[in-house]
Amino acid sequence: MKFVFFCHALTSCWNNGNAHFLRGIARELRALGHDVTVYEPDNGWSRLNAIRDGGIGSLQQAQALLPGIDIRQYETAPDLDQALDVADVVIVHEWNAPDLIGDIGRRRIEGAPFTLLFHDTHHRAVTAPEQLDRFDLQGFDGVLAFGEVLRQIYLRLGWANRAFTWHEAADTELYRPHCEIEPTHDVIWIGNWGDNERSAELNEFLLRPVAELGLRARIHGVRYSLDALRAIEAAGIEYCGWLPAHQAPIAFASARFTVHVPRGPYARSLPGIPTIRMFEAMACGIPIVSAPWDDAELLFPSGSYLRAADGTQMKEAMRTLLEDQALAADLVKTGLEAIQNRHTCRHRAAELIEIVSSVRGARRAPPTAQFEEAMP
Image (cartoon, rainbow, N blue to C red; front, side, top):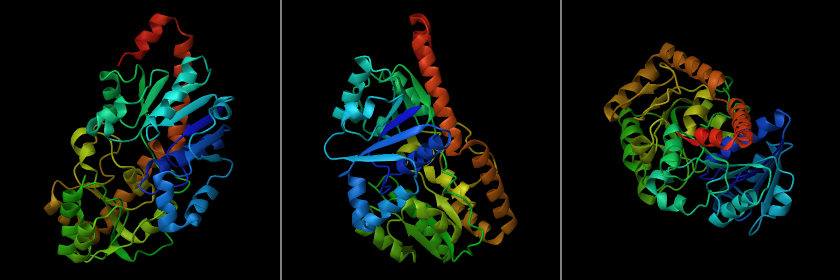
């Protein structure tokens, strides 16, 4: 099949974790024998910031990791006649302009034969629903939601008649253990400070316990305020700026464990959705201690990571990981097995193909059957 993706950025992962996942999906679809074309704006904020922080070379390195994937940049709007003419499946990420989303949907309404899916990997459905309400999804065959709770929101609010849970996963062609690397730090954290969505949590679950234990720690990420940078320095932590996704596996290997700190909207309002770093860190074979989040969909088995309910428990968990090498090894083993068994981009590519088949089957079914399938 011919897959066409419209996303904010595939070549840039600057403050754009969705790129990690879509790169893996594109690569796996290609490996399964499908053609993949990706459209991204050449002046998107992620690409421009990546060039500023890492130079054009960082984007070229990322693109080199995707042989056989046709990546096309456009200035103001893509040529939809060219993009959609021979498409079998079109996937439009939610971080696209409303006009573009509407234009593609109208092509489908007017009879274009491709299967059209909307992909949501953000918390705006609960934090800024008015932004999603601007999107005209009438022509879309379904929604790919990166958690069951988000799928239900789309159906309950009437934004879609058909929605599927399609979690993110680890791109295991990239994210894998590097046992040949000796750790130089106790803890590493890779993530963005953002819009104060987890400032208090980062202070409680990362900065304070690291400082109190006197650990060697390193942070990578972007959008750190001056106050945040001062707090990191006061905690004795090394701040290293933006880290392109393809360099993360080596960075994980340089530390003895990492910390998972979900953004507030996910922890409070979207249970069952971890950050993509949970999948990627497990795939890299590094132990994880997590701040509170609800694994409502049982994505990870018991013993794949440690949980900390508050800063005191986080501090004790960190101490335990440093002292108990057998426990750390067990966490790594269980986490790796969880990824390999359920949460690779190969798994998600297979799920996507099944979703497309089910949508096409519903099209051929009589109207009553179509209505019943669309019900939550």
